[in-house]
Structures are given as structure tokens and as C-alpha cells.
Image (cartoon, rainbow, N blue to C red):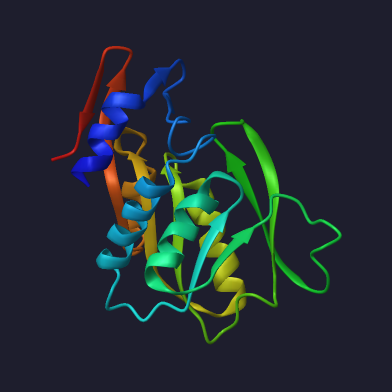
Length: 190
């Protein structure tokens, strides 16, 4: 998505540790009109997939999943990073390591929201090492639902998580793939 690449170049900032700050439109402050355009692009990429649910992890993936859900007219479900009192009953659970926060989370989704009859598209804001999407794959497998693929806003192609997931057979569509980045330069995959 050329518009996303341009927005990253204009508003993004590379921080130490290969962190790309896009808080002005994707993570802390949300550019809702632009998110909707991203959602429509995801909908177009998966338009013939008969998806019944979108699944993401809180919190930054929620905005992208909701935008895609609005564009595709389907529910967006998000896995919580901790089981809370409002996740009653049985839940699917897995452990996910966050690259950004360097922490492990016990991620949960109530069994009320994903069933064996669902066709699930995984959605996330970033793909680096692939741990978040691997965790979502595990949750969906526990449910018996079918995984249609994964839609990602920004993939850090140089961190190889996307390559590993594609090699496992998962269809991964990223709206922007960064092949390299440093303080002065971002190189997008052609």
C-alpha cells in the first residue's frame, strides 16, 4: 500500500533497537480515515475468503482489526494479554512474547467468540519476529476454526518473522514491508 509507505516516511521515526514509532497515526493517536483505508485494503486482499471473524491481540492491533471489520462487515475479536474477571467461563490461552516490551503474556480469548465453524483472519499492526501471530495461530487451532491467513499493517521484513510464517503455509499479506531501516533511511520491499 503505497499510501502507507508514504505515511510512514512522513510521520514515522526509527528508534534504537529497530523500533519504528508510528504513534501519530497507528498506535497512540489514530488517523481514523487512514485506518479505514487500510481496512478497505485488507478487505480487498481477502475479499473471496469467506471470513467470519477477525482476530488480533490487544492493544495496538485492535484499531487495524476494527477498521478491517468495518470494511468487511464482520466481527473483530481481540485476545486479552491477561485473563480478567470479564473473561468468564472457558478460554483458549497461549503465551506470546512481545518484542517491543520484551515480556511474555498469557493471551486469552473466551471460547464464546471463536468456534470450530469460524473462518478466521489474523490481524496485527506489526510483524517482526512473528510471535504474536504464532500465538494467534495457536488460539485458533485450539478452537478448531480454520485460519484463512494474516493481514499486517507493517512488516519488518528484515526480522524474518513473516518469512517463517509464510514457510509454515500461512498466507501473510502485509500492507507495507520494510526491508531495512536505520536513523536516516527506510527501504520498502518492491
